[in-house]
Amino acid sequence: MNKNFDAVRYAIDVGRELIANFAGAGHATSPGLVGSAREVPTRKRLQNLLPAGIAVGSGCVIDSYGGTSRQMDVVLYEKQLCPVYSINDDPATTYYPCEGVIAVGEIKSRIASTDLEDTFAKIASAKKLRRYALRSSEGYVPFRVYGSPNSIVGTRPQEFDQDSKASDQIFGFSIAGSLELAAKTLCAKYVALAVRNDRVLSPNLIVTLDDNQVLTPLRIPPNRHNPEISVSSQDANAIYCVTRPKGGFQFLLSRIYTVYRQGRTVEEVAFERYFAEDGRLQLPSDGTVVDLK
Image 1: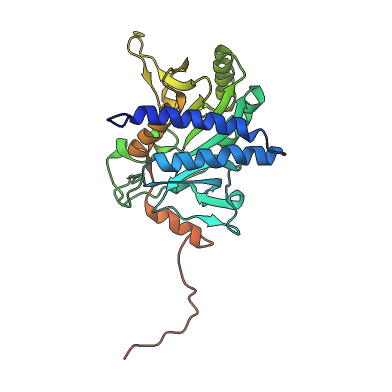
Image 2 (image 1 turned 90 degrees about the horizontal axis):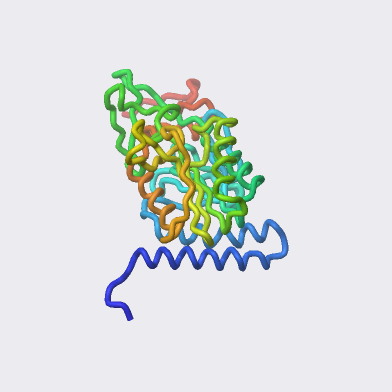
């Protein structure tokens, strides 16, 4: 019996448990059931290990301009702040406003060329959605950090901008049981897809469980010394694909923690646009007025 709890070992064991769950899912009798058998335990484990302010669901992400993403296996959203629209309580027909979504994820039994293309397309469909950004009287777009209802009006360099700032975008990841491509081939195909489809919309992280493979954007300085792992390929100039002996699942958890702590979104007022057809909460002007006496 151990005298001290080892949190790192616990996360490693969870990753191994998910590997077994992925293998067991293969006994299901249809592709849909196989997918569900993979996704349910993964979402449950993420919910148990992530901060209390993050809720874990599945379904589609929407914006207030009429956009809808493809169905996502995992949607991480602000637990206390984000409205959730669920048709008949079915996870497959549940919708989350993009202003309250922190990250989206795809769960695959394996990653081959077609799986990578599908992952790119699904994550891009969520990242393309527009968060409603309203300028303040000072002329800047306020922001707030995930989990907080308080907005901040900073300076021009600090204002919210999902087009140019990785911190202001939805994080996209893929977690798979195995990698069916050579690591170099995976990196080459990732780069080709990123260039073809706009790297701003690319997955931020890909991890596999059985071989602990990690693909992450990398920022290499001009002198080639001390490269840094990036949250997004938007502010990176390379891709790093490596086998992580301690496990890819822990790295995924660490990245999500970083995004939750450092990521930003727009003011809470954006959620009001989902409760009114024209985006404004107003009553008709032809009502009856009675004085209070």
